[in-house]
Every structure is written in structure tokens, then in C-alpha cells.
Image (tube, rainbow, N blue to C red; front, side):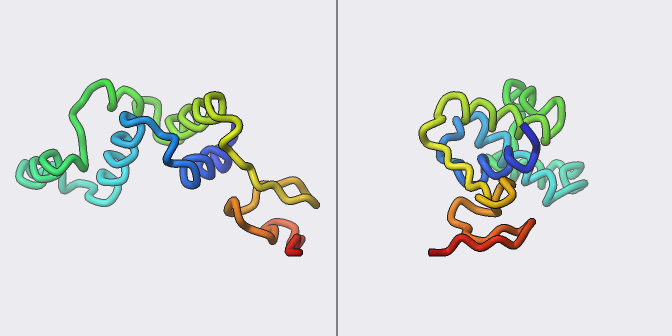
Length: 115
């Protein structure tokens, strides 16, 4: 699975994420936003208190091989466990993945499949 498809599945089918995956995503997003601020104990404690970051080793282990790898593994799991709930909106002309599940125009070849 490529990273584009993994991001599509996670973004548009996030209700299929388990609790640990949701926490790992929230942790990563918070770390990206705050960056080096976590060197300051006060800020780190606030983020921990509000659940924006975690120190749970089981969750951090999910992110050990990088965020892209995490996204691919999560998307594979979602696709395996819920194949009937995932709709990959591929362009009928070129076969590439559309930007959203409801898109009706291909961002790659420009094909339009509005009725």
C-alpha cells in the first residue's frame, strides 16, 4: 500500500481507528505543532494532562518506525478488517485515487464523472 492511499483511508474513515491509533495520531500531531516546546516541563505537563501527548510505551511503540509506516500499517488493518466499509474513489478514466470519497473530478487526468 502506498502512503497516499493510507492517508486517504485514515482521513476519511477515521471512525474505524482503534483507541490506541487515535492517541498515536493525536500525539504525533501535537509533537509536530509544538516542536521543541516539549523541552520545557511546564508545556509538556500541560499536554500530558490534556491527553494531547502520551508516555504510554505501547502507543509510542506504534510510532517507532516512523509516522508514514504507522499510517500504512493502520490503513492495512482497517482495510483487512472492514473491506465492506471502505470506498476507494478511483477515477474511472486513469484509475488513480481521487482526492475525496465524494470527488467527481480527477486531479491527475482531469476526467469529470459528474452525472
